[in-house]
Length: 391
Image 1 (cartoon, rainbow, N blue to C red):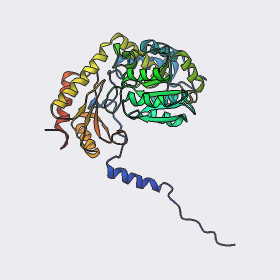
Image 2: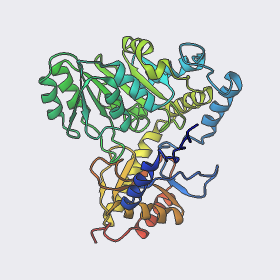
Image 3: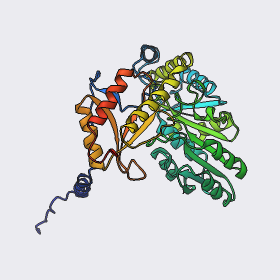
């Protein structure tokens, strides 16, 4: 019997080693950093804009929901995953934001995938802002539609692109862009959509709780909430301090998503604890609308004090303050030095930043005190790398 040669084992993932080396050389390695339950760091890195994630009422809402409904939703929303609590949150969220109906999903990412893919198909033109969040980009990729990426916050370019298309069209944009915290020209976008017979889809993840009357969102502020051709997505994980996402719009749009949106149909429903926490936070915001004003005021103060000291930052339209760094490696070192000094800040580097310019991303939380704001400013200035200031 002939001798059978045993082939040498092959590392089928050897290509990962080369990719890792390339990331290291570019200063783009990302690592997980588990935080303790009670961190000693001053938090300017999270998206807890209103300081509600640990508020006693939010936590109580989560606890009571888990005790009543159990730890999980137990199934997809169309099987066993819809509880009376989900329906209650959807009714109150739609009413608060000024829309006819709402649909809650397991994340804001899933909400964007659901909305983009369910509202487009082959032959539909989807016009997407160049600065849109990755979840919108991925929704466009999955939609099988014709995709046109237009320059950032350029309603004229969007209108020209829409005008050149015959058939169904959808313009999709963030309301507040997560990198620089700048607001989209929603009124101009809406006018372009009306003129060209297109639908408008707006991701209001960073607008809810911060913009509009009492934090009702960017669409409410622009007078577009409840408009027949407008759909909104949002997340429950930022201003509401919980987890999950939602799509808001005309009732027929929501019914369409229930029947066609794959990230809704085939995903387990949002856990009761997260649903209860979001509902409690929403009710708290309704009672304390001044939290939205405070978040914007904190952002303005951070921006004013940092730029007055020579740093370059984007003027915030909501609660995100973006401070530019000289390079990706400098941004990473700057964030690490802030952390060592007791301050947690976000660090955005390529590919998270579409323009390739690395940044520190600061969250202007409504519950920050004057002393905490001063401490944050002093720490950021005291750790700034060479080339970060113009002085």
